[in-house]
Amino acid sequence: MHKKKIKGTNYYYTSVRENGKIKTIYLGRDEEEALRRERELKSTRIRTFDHSLTNKRLLISVFLFLLVAGAVFLFRVPIVGYFTAGIIGEENLTVEFTFQSQDFLPKDMIVEVSLENQTSNLTLEEFIEKSGSDLEVETGNFSSPGTELNGSGEGYGAKGENRTVSLDLSEFNISLPEEPGEYVVKLSIVYNESVLKETVKNLTVPERFVFDSDGDGDPDTTDCDSENPEVYHGAEEICDDGVDNNCDGLVDLGDPECEIECEDNDKDGYDTCEPDMDCDDNEPDVNPGAKEICGNEIDEDCDGEDEPCEVRVIDCVDQKCFKIRNSSLDYVAAFDDLGNTYISGILYESTSESPGEKDFIIRDVSGYPNAWVDDATGNLYLTGVIFENQEILEIMKPVGSSFEIRNTNKTVVTYLDGETGNLYLKKRLHQNSEIR
Image (tube, rainbow, N blue to C red; front, side, top):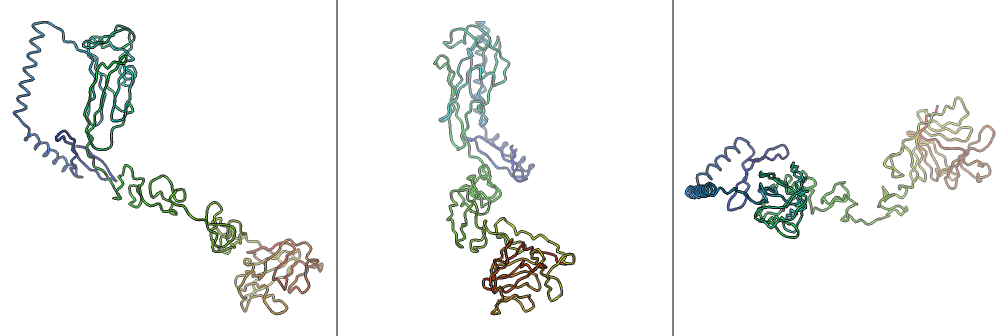
């Protein structure tokens, strides 16, 4: 009885020969029940055995034994034989080589095995070394009764007793067929291009029970994921799930089945193919080359995360500042004497939104809001864009600017262009600041 364990469950089965073929019979998953069924099966086969044929074979065997024993006694002829070679076993085949008492065989004799389109050979010396036998190379005259073997040199002998040497067929690099059917294994013993002995063995490869745990038609032995019925040889490759669906060793876009067309819908110069893939192809301000705006919950530069804003504390008690309060009297913006601008929120450029009633609003001469600081969040909204580190603002400042800040030296350090809505700073804008 044989046992195979699959996903924690034992399966029991046995093998019987019928009409020259091996038949595998499933006995169940309970060990005691499987043993009972096996005993019943063997008992049935014994009762149906042909007793008369057995008796005839027994009589013939006894007669032949008595005949040979009588010949030995009458003629006192010692029984000697020549070497034998054959293949034994049913599933795990073994090549067996037997030295008789008077054999002395050359070490370069060839032991050749053929199966289907496979042929492999070893010298007798290699055969013995691989088998682990303790037979040693000696020098003498080659002989084996019943063969035309002659010559002399290095070889192997049995030293007056029969010696058998065995070697697994796999040592010949011969693979047994996987497809069920009838096959012939041929063994040839060759020396000086002459075949000294040749024998064949019929090999039956039976139908085997195939386990398919997930029921997808791909056996567990070949299925690259035997627990997922959506993964098997021949399945359609899904190109974005990180799984090798068709078991070809290639995943997603690495599989030839996943040929995709690269697109650039927002025309920002970045398409939907790797590398430098656009993570939002419908938004031109989002791509791997875009400037990241901290704290707005948008991944502008496609690095996989929104950059958090660094909290900067500005203490206007210790330095001269122009500060803006919200309706709760909290500071939401400040402009220092050096030309730095601080906001408690974050910056939004080129906005199309509108300010709220409580927001701090900077308007142009026509009353249009060019910029504002949100009363609740401290975010700065510009209808234009920001320019930092502008050292010559006094010369650059256009006539009619809608908002400007001068330091204690009467120098312009910040101004908002009333026509474009652009904000110019002598130094930098610091977002997410804590203003005191």
